[in-house]
Image 1 (cartoon, rainbow, N blue to C red):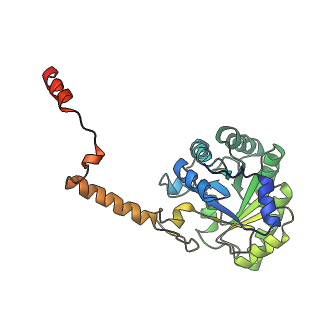
Image 2: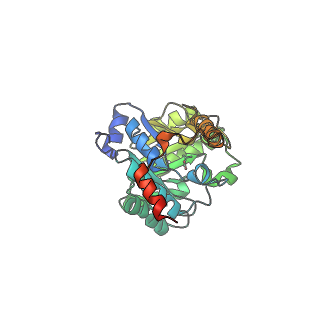
Image 3: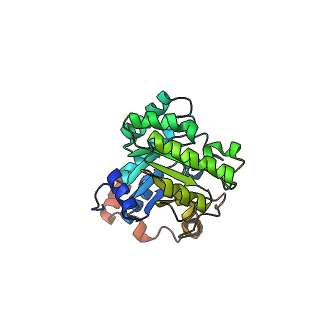
Length: 284
Ligand code: KIV
């Protein structure tokens, strides 16, 4: 267990004041959460990307609230210190404020999250406002928003033209005004991210593939360790190829079972001769 104090909102705003970038990673399970907490990761996102990275769907759309609660609870148990954010899945908030507040509340009450995140610009500002008014800290998500990937034309850079960039900057202001304490900018040009960060008054701007000039960085855990087989986004940096290490270990396991070099004596338990002889007598 880490002896760090539980991270709460004042800590995050203090980091902004201190101009110290905040570290944020996705996480979906207990053992990884434990390691991230030990490593000092400050924020954890239980992202609906788990639909792809953990459940093998082609998109995040099939993920349900029950999936999210199961994974977020496991992450909370593994990471008692980090600031844990529950990601609201597709159609858990879009239909209306009431359902949005109800589902945001589930993250807090059932999974022990510290905040929620939802995707979308000005059109989602009323959802953010309703959730914040219910006492739940909320994070907005702009730029490449995977739940709208069909409408956005694929996993690609957003806000390339001045006109599109202005819309994202306006959306950021609308979310900030609605009460979002933070906004994630995913895959927007670095200069747009810098501009939005400079214009933010009381809102923490986080970057995922949007350059260094934000209040902190987010990465997808599976991308940074080579654990997602289908593709590696250009923006992700591989910090270690755990996928390769695990694959080699698995191949060795199969080979050792076949060659009967596993198990070795240290991997099993014996029985004293007298007990075994007695056993043979009593078993016909
Ligand atoms: O679900 C997720 O992990 C996300 C990231 C892509 C930002 O929302």
